Image (cartoon, rainbow over all chains, first blue to last red; front, side, top):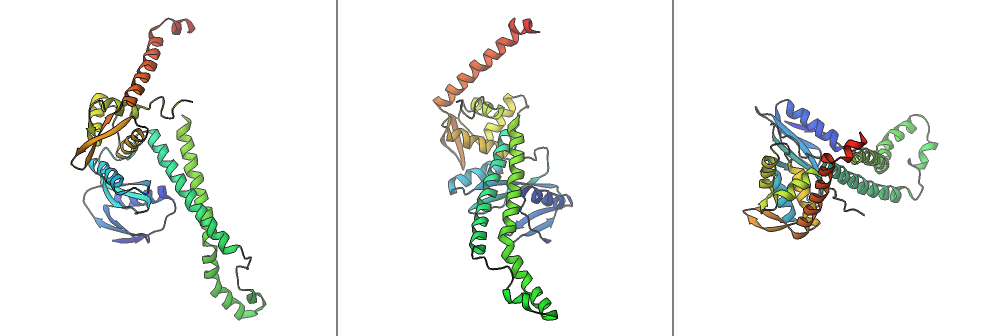
Length: 189
Length: 105
């Protein structure tokens, strides 16, 4: 079974994945374009998402090795760093973090990720919008009647595409704030 | 200012204590489960992060390999940290038993 989904929030993604697994599936593949492949299984599985920056080959082997010793299977990760998807059979050890310090560090890594990507999007937005051209083609506003609406509808997808980096800045800013809240809550005590 | 890992968290404390003998990651977890009477069970991400962190600060060091697994052991700096923590905890314990605490009640 293949399912399509797009997430900019890791915790929501993890939740959604586990909801699928609870229906009696296990995840076998995740493609970068948001296509998740599941297979029917009679064993219960759980998934956990970790975030790690780029790991050199040796470090990555150690990272993967330790998780595998605990029964986790590496489903997907990105070479340049990012989300690491782990899956294992459901038992009494289903977490990848067992203390506040490591959970806090996880949120700190998430903050770094949202911040870095957010800054990149901000830079793209700046490059896109700095020449002050309107969102729509200027001649559009002098068009009349049906022609106007046709042209308007034709252009709207492109406008949305043009606004995409700015929307992403907002989404990433929001996930940065959420990770920060969780991080500081863990830090407090 | 105090080192950012001090006072040691329960996880860090147990790992340093366990690594007074050379062990690989998973064996560290198993030993900790045993010496803590089953009260401290480390998860994979926590163990990986803690080993990374302790290694970065030079409190533990890789001393060899067992297959693909890296074996770590405590360093002299790590032992000095344990000594400091021991003194701090002994002091706290002495307060439990001393008269000062009784007077204040």
